[in-house]
Image (cartoon, rainbow, N blue to C red; front, side):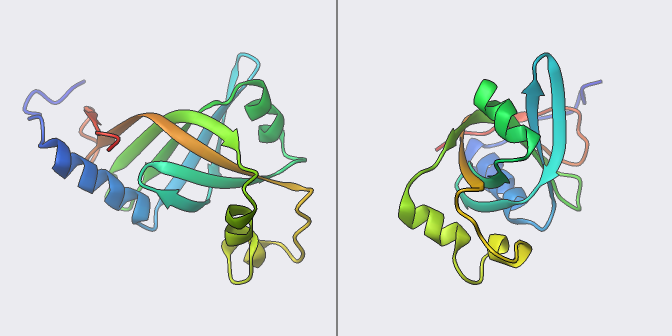
Length: 148
């Protein structure tokens, strides 16, 4: 049920609040589709640029084939104050060597998680947003977030 007292917020303020959720130490989930079956799993992003999110995946994981079959995905961030950001977007494989080095180089999350990095086995995805929505404290009503 939508909150009847919900007042539209200033777009710049909504954007600022939504970006704060991405920077918070919260949880992020990635939704893909497997045929007609939705699949949801927790993930950790390796980089963000505004609402463009970069995630790494191993080629052997199911989501690699799911994204290849349908690159439309959704990310949902949830912070400790129950603020949510949902990013609807399209995942694309990144092949840019400097960017791959940045996320797979020394002192990175990927390096910390894997004993060795076999670049033939991991995929870097850039999720380009097509829509971003923000909800504060289970308000049951989303605010659209300006992409720029």
